[in-house]
Amino acid sequence: MTIYIDPPAWPGHGRLWSHLVSDVSYDELHTFAARLGVPRRAFERDHYDIPGERYADVVAAGAVEVSSREVVRLLHAAGLRRPKGRYPSRGSRSS
Image (cartoon, rainbow, N blue to C red):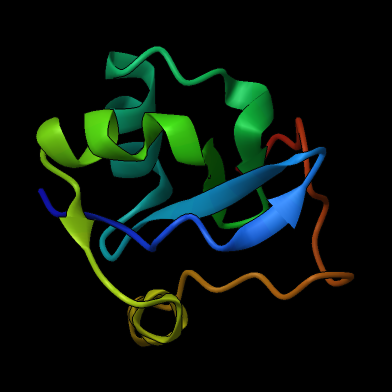
């Protein structure tokens, strides 16, 4: 099981955010996030949004640090990329 996270560089709601992804499956990603207490509502199409203040905890739990560009490459290579506007974002049955 390998889970990846990019640096907290994405602004929103007065914070910086990271993206947490799997290169294997959404099930693997959901399991990892649940183990850390990350709420399911933080799942956005193909990744979890992780606030910058949780970054070190997520890395300590085993997520591999990669660049934002690498996150996108990993998702594409695994066939897990869900571009914005083409898939339901939250609470869909297929996520």
